[in-house]
Length: 379
Image (cartoon, rainbow, N blue to C red; front, side, top):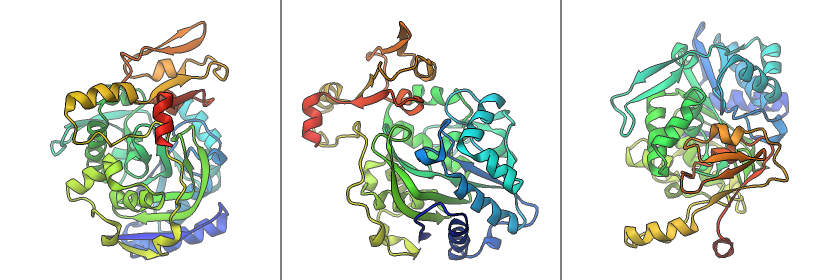
């Protein structure tokens, strides 16, 4: 399988456009994918209302360059996502404005999706999920491109081209999937099912500046300096995660895709066009503090369960930073969070460790922590 890997160190309009154009050339030419009059959906990452410099969402300069390339080939571009939380026109307008997408649409004429309809789609080939609620712009498109940001993730360790497609699930329906599949392996198996259902034709990743630490929203921006593109979102994720020091076995979406034969097991089996991947490796990329621990593999399940209950990461609410917006309470799939004196508290007997509370907190007032002794061991 081919993957384009190109150096791009800053969000300069001309530089990013040139790199996007070269990405398509590396993948056989844009005409191979985009035909005149084709309706092309850019499924970007618009997790929440965050400014572009915070590296939580796909950068507007990146989206603008990709939009222009597609338009030059005759494609009609729609920009869409279902951010975390409610899925309505008011929410979409706020997210589009803050994340810079309104400006992209103004400059390019791209369509911003405000259609909040969705349909239940059967997917009998799914391994764990046989039907999905999918937002209408995905179903109306002739071609879907997943356009993620390279980030760490408190629950899944890494989020990229495959995880980005969770945003085709409308609004609060996402909580239902978390609640039904609290186990990370099951949840990630569902994400691969979803990716196979949507079948994006391309994955083009904004890895110019990514996020390390407690992503996908509470971490720190980290310059990576890359644009990664391919026809397989699984292979794009394999390359991207390797660049920041994450093994395939640590990311269940990748290991599941390897198990299904959708992705090679090693980057040496990928034909990388452009730069040498060794030039992109980052040795000190920070992982989430709540990352998975695998040293219990091989022990009896009863022992693993008992130890994991003690060492597992838990959300800790920083009440001094909290503004009492109640977003964590509203988005919690198992309804484990309650507000007391306008501050959140979690019932850990109900918590399923999805960390939606951290992911969607607008003030980074939720930290994911383990017991002190475990944290010292991990360091």
